[in-house]
Image 1 (cartoon, helix red, strand yellow):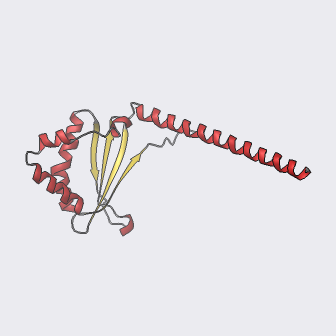
Image 2 (image 1 turned 90 degrees about the vertical axis):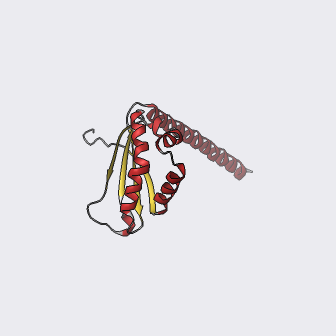
Image 3 (image 1 turned 180 degrees about the horizontal axis):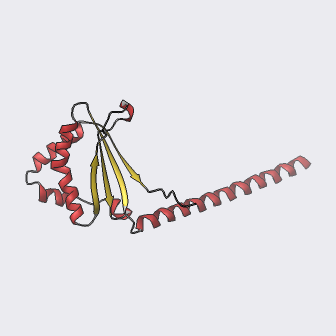
Length: 162
């Protein structure tokens, strides 16, 4: 009977520790969600880098289609004040195939909320492109010639703070 009391006490202790761990985990998750929400509602610019890796020999075709069909939409979003800046870079030299990308488009949004608001660009596209069938075919082609595409939200790291 004495062993049973020790087991019950151990079980109660373990249960209490697990309950405290769950409460602590909930607290940490709530604080993280508050931090993300505060960051997204801030008026600070929000930067996303978009990487494009084309199939070999198709980088110039991708660039031409991007400039013709996607860049004008981004410029319209700049006129609306949603986007502060759009820039594109390409590597000067080649890398290994697994790390290769052909173009990096950096978009500076007005803030994180705007970057994540699921903006419907459909009306802008209809305004810019009277021939919607050609637009859709060219956009489909732009993505057919990609080997990979990824989006990377970035943040500045303050190096002078201790």
